[in-house]
Length: 464
Image 1: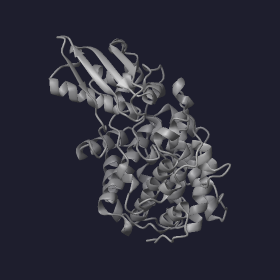
Image 2: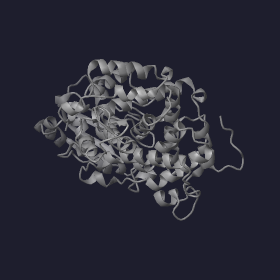
Image 3: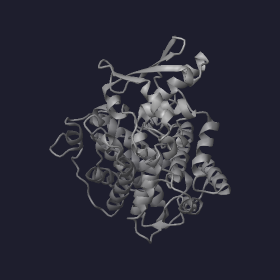
Image 4: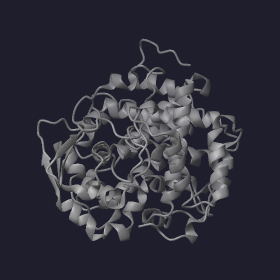
């Protein structure tokens, strides 16, 4: 394990940490958490192989290569596969959040692409360490850039901007690059950072490409660094063209890059997503669930709903649905209405047939959304229900289901994986993949995933 020197800069300390991180350095509970997120990302991506976005993205991929397009029989060059598999992982909004934002969807496609082209066996322990390194870097970059609300409120989508560095660090660790190599990988990755929130205004599919582009860019940066390609050494200084000044119009908080390295594990703050929508909608769905359970009421007894929310959340998720699936998944009112009408805000609630159900519009007409300018950008919404007998009930859920404060039960996590993976794999394949992931630290060669991820998504209908 690397021991920091007093003359190191924060980014140099972080690079040395990435270079030196090994499985043996990671606490048992963090290993367990990382394994859950590895499996969760694979499940989300295997389902995403049935998405429109995956189908479109794979058309630009090379036809020959060494890396599996997950859920299919096809292969592509490693960088193309990282992009396409990243799109798949993020396509249905069921990948994890709370890291760079969506860390799994950028880290896992890049890492497994690197594994696929490795001439030597890559153990499960090596894979876990690389994933932990990637999650650490992605979140630290975001925190040093002022945090989610500060960075994203300027219009940047941190999955694309910070996620590129997460992917680069994960691949650099997997490749065994020394400290300077890891530094070059991360600093080079800043030149591939991109992703704008402009997709929010028209339900554009652009959001889905951000995860894939970050995975591809991180893989490219680490590959170049391995060949000796140098990154910009002052990109995290307060200089013209520096990351913080460019992406946050400030000097940033570079000390956050290396604060409590090896003590504060950033994968531990990542959250799972039980609902197929933007994470900003999840607390409101939980509030609805809680209120219905506690009052022993049915959704059809609700006559009106009032949502009090921050200005940032209103801008992200306040619109009342969209004709497209991508746009609808960014709608908080739709997620609540889906739970009322269909009994779920899971993936099934977002099919084209259900999006056009007239009952959804009727429920959303009952909703009043109000911006509370006293609320902080990341404050969760307050939901107030009025029932047919005139009674009212309110609830604010501080941390949504899937967080450490309100964790998904293990059975629910496993069921989610099996359902999503089963959208592209046969039942026997799902079981084999599940067993391998469950015992990942004992796996001798992760290149075996190339076979286990071969599915028949091409022969199944697109979910849209």
